[in-house]
Length: 81
Image (cartoon, rainbow, N blue to C red; front, side, top):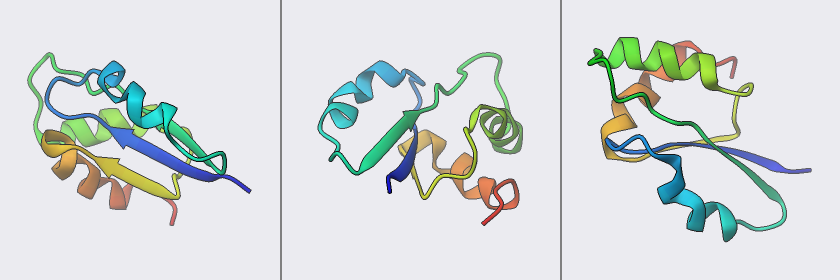
């Protein structure tokens, strides 16, 4: 069984900055880094809705860096938990 981890990057929105995190994950974890769109400007609700379309099903763990934190909190209504 694999723990499914989804990560929303911070303000830069660039998943490549998290490559070290993904490379060091244990064998029993599977990480999916979702690119955060930086343009056009969006409200947190709009950003949350965009990110929801990029999720690969409901994660076991959702990690959000700084800027994407509020958008992750808003995922509560989008995920079947």
